Image (tube, rainbow, N blue to C red):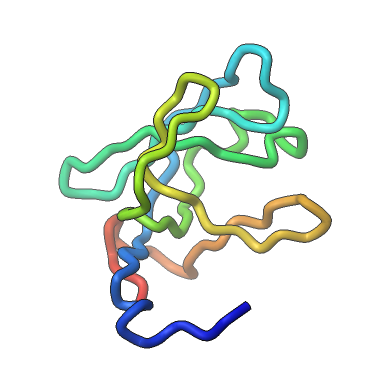
Amino acid sequence: MTNITYDDFTKLDIRVAKIIATEPIEGKSRIIKGRIDLGNDDQRDVIIGGAQYFQPEEMVGKTVIVIANLEPKKMAGVESNAMLLAADVDDKPFWLTVDGDVPLGSPIK
């Protein structure tokens, strides 16, 4: 990968969010539809990958780290309006989170 500038990094809106709802997507086994809460009445639909490793309801209540200003992308009829960040180990996601009680929407810098 190539290096990015600090200015490039500052363009990313990385924040703390909570997964508040999930549901399977008909005909899909590797992705599910999720709804996240970024605080301040900002809730968004997202696509969550790696669904072959967990049941949709297992994700509800998880605090995660998201890129909130990623351009929306439509997949399987669902528009995803943020991206959850995860470590990728053999195609299995390990969701990035924070330690402690961090307010939803808190920026990651």
